[in-house]
Image (cartoon, rainbow, N blue to C red; front, top):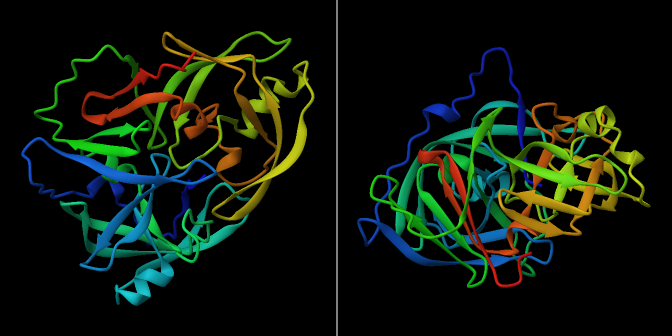
Amino acid sequence: MFKQSFLILCFLVFSTCTNTVVAQSNSKNHAQKIPFEISDSGHIFLRVRVNNSEPLLFGLDSGFEQSAITTKQAKVLNLKLYGETQTTGGGENTEDFSFTKDVSFDLSGVNFKLKEIGVLALDFPSPTPDEAIGGILGYDFISRFVVEINFTNKVINLYNPQSYRYRGRGNILPIKMLDNYPSIPATVRLPGLAPVAAMFEIDTGAGNDIFFYSPFVKEHKLLDSKQETTEAATLGIGGTSKIRIGRATSIRLGRTVIANPSVHFSQATKGDSASTFSAGHIGNGIFRQFKLVIFDQTRRRLILESNVNAR
């Protein structure tokens, strides 16, 4: 889970909301068939050039507010850093975090510039042996386009929001921003408990199915569910945090029901896994069961088109 939240120093103002994107492509409406790789853990990676660099592996992460580059790559590209602070994420510790300005990106012919991105270690496993992760494309990037993720063909399409028209028959869910994270309603059924209807963050930076944050687990006594759970740990910014893993009976997203998803119950006392802003997050373990996942932030909606094997 490539999530972030900031412990801002008193002199620093976090400025994701002022970030702007200037994008150009070979088509006025969209750039088609941008290939991506998906790791064994379910994370999406794209090839991105940064300031005319060689192609770098960037994760596509809707659960990350602001795009970021690794500290190592920032040094290689001679980027000027400022605003040193600390950040927390899925782990329970903090990590060093800085910013850099006016960075240009080239994503398979789509050129855009972000006025500000983050800089941090991002020491996560790469889907490609002997190649480190270069950074993350966060929701500040996703929200500027209509982003269509085609899990079947492993490509994404980027559309101009002003000219985009959806004519499919997919499941349309309203997006609500909770603490700057895109979130959708869902209903989870756990064995022996009443159905849990709540808001969940959309997290394409997470490979799991359903992740409940620790305050929600405690408040709703989710571990009283009639099932066996196993103890484990999850890795994120800030290191690791404890979880328990079990199975839900089902999750309902609009009119789509998916049976027997895995569930992570956070035991964290600090970090994003102890957030109180939502029940938790839904990751690519769920989303990759759909043929298409379409982010349309301009119209505040997420569109899910079922695959033949979606239940």
